[in-house]
Image 1 (spheres, chains in turn yellow, orange):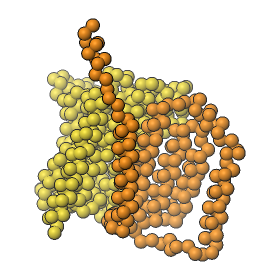
Image 2: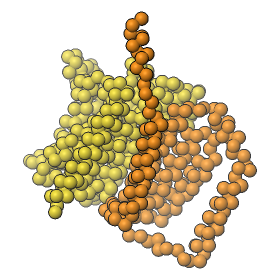
Image 3: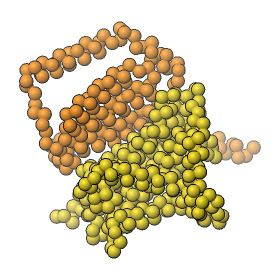
Image 4: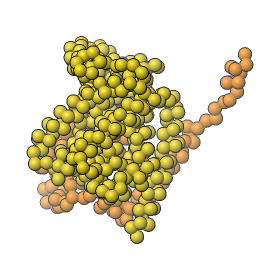
Length: 317
Length: 174
């Protein structure tokens, strides 16, 4: 059920995702300010909306400096990797019936694959910078994302079991009667936590913990290369919110309003939740993060999969 | 699709050759990742999207990250690159080249004799792959999982050591 004009859909989704990612910078700053009892950016344009534009002009004209000691080729490739992998994932996201670029049969696995390739961006940036703080950030990122990817995939297998497909459109249509958040609540919580860790948002931003590592893996980056990490992070937040909406909250399904509006409402809700997490939670220590992932989340994900499989087996027979 | 297949094959071969000839470990790993991704594209074109996705997730996305992680942790730098370059002498290439030549000869002979298995395979979905793995090849899967479990237990045993508790108490009572 792909759209009749794939090129148009492609361009619209690309433009919308990038605009939304830029707009999120403003949304995040305003919301954080609201929760912290201050104003946030409110000078440039109405409600400070043009602040994003001003920031973008600034970042485009900043000097793009490559340290002489860095591994030049890898240093340049690293920020591109994150943008490419995240934007590729958007290709299989069904926003509404007909608004999808490629209705791939293994859509969910494609997203997981792209997110696991996204790790290279951070890791290689840390390595190529030849800076001990950046290297520590890269090593942390590799360990963190490896650990959290394992149960991220496992948490989703419950949904795949219930829907009987890796295709994201079929997963949405399988939720016509009940959203998967009800039978798969543990899976939802696990995926939410893993999603925050995958996007390296607070409280899981240890790869760039500024209080201990300056800026972690992107310490040496400046100008638009830094901007690409920044936009990549926000695109990641949008992607994870889209995935939560599709996998657990019935995607575009909903009464009265058109499908795309329902999708956007649900997606924005989770984006705001991501921002609230940043305002509310402190950063854990790295060993706590790792032992939490392997000793709590992984067994929980396995148990969830086991129970779901048993129930599905009994149900079908 | 034929063009995609040959392009991906060319990328895979070139990336693998580059991987073999790099002296810098991280650069070699990056070339290997590109080669694995190209192989995933080949699987996809041949009608096995599930295997292609697994290739990306497991090989390119998980195992190679571990490799990069270890290389980064060791962070050998310039001396290791020089040592590796010294190892890449022309005489080192003789034995691998002979083996590669044997394989190439076999491959050409197969192509010429026309005794090639049919290449037009129907699409293989996740379900078929799973049924083959957990039906016909169940013993292989179980053996592999036992081997992995053994490796895991052994690694845990080797990495485990008792943390001495006494030092901390000495510090707290000066």
